[in-house]
Amino acid sequence: MSDGGKEVAERLRDLVVTVGDKSVRNKGDISENVVCGTFKGPSSSGATEEINCKHPVEGNFVIVQLEDTGRQLSFNEIEAYVEC
Image: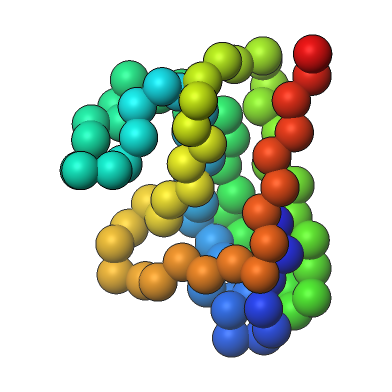
């Protein structure tokens, strides 16, 4: 994940990444998705952060969310990789 400058970097903290077949569209319940990893942060300006799953997981959706809802989440770029 790449941030967009100092102000955004300071907000890049307390993230949870889940993987699964449930999506947040239409307020879907994503509680069945597997927690892949977390990032406590904060990040630093211009940094690239990596969150790797400790174990192989399967799913159609990768969801990055904040642990609390009082902040806005913003990225310049997110990449997800799979091993075949």
